[in-house]
Length: 107
Image (tube, rainbow, N blue to C red; front, side, top):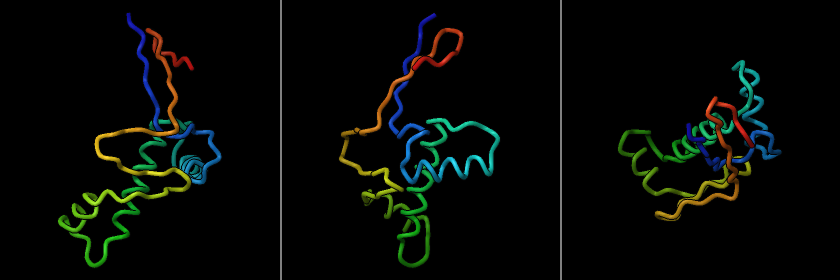
């Protein structure tokens, strides 16, 4: 069996950033699961989506939502900066974890 290495492009779930604190609060209130990078990434994506849709002037339609997302505006989501730079993908919060053949997370 071959180990798998995965990268994480969001802050650690223990980070003191406001968006991570809010994530942990919501997670504790609504779910019975520990904080994890994958669900934090989904939380940040949902907050970004909310902010983009909230910035639409007038009715939110399929066309207005598409136009808003195509602008790819940079946003600060509780201390986590979401900004698009063409095809370049980067983040300052990158860590790696490795899965052992039996599914344990290392690192």
